[in-house]
Image 1 (cartoon, rainbow, N blue to C red):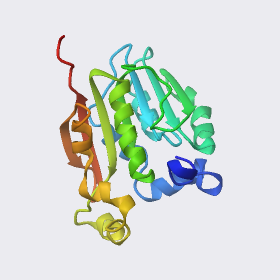
Image 2: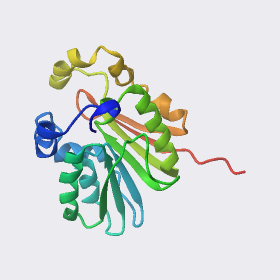
Image 3: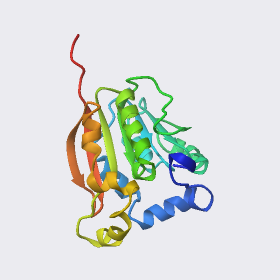
Image 4: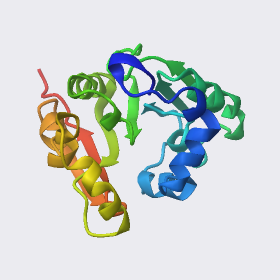
Length: 216
């Protein structure tokens, strides 16, 4: 995500390929995104949305395992990140499109997507943006659709846990992730937790399903 009230800046020297190099140095390369997806796949005709997509690591990982008639949309506020992602869109056979917007103000209709996903992006936003984002996720997901949330959580023992512990154990901005408030926030929007595990000593993978609405 990009500058201002929505989140921290990943433009200029921190954008594009430099961001990818930095992310890879912290263990977020292609293998990371494959593990983040787990067993998720798109069936023919399905649509997915990647929130805070950056240069598209998670989008491309999903696209590589998706049929040609699926659609994947990525949204971010960083022009640098989106430019790099868009230049690479032809690497996958399915439709892959990138849009500049905030994850808490999505330009898509209700029930548009079968899968919404986000990786290491929510913690970059203020707490109020996270809460509006969960509301938007619930709005654009179809009934029975899934929400994949990958972000840091309270560190476990391990190398990265020891490195990150002094950086994430304090502050209002870190409190949501430290206390893992996301299951509660999601449950309030009828997004029910189905899977919960750590990918490493600090990165948590949580998968939610949107509960069907009761018949009228």
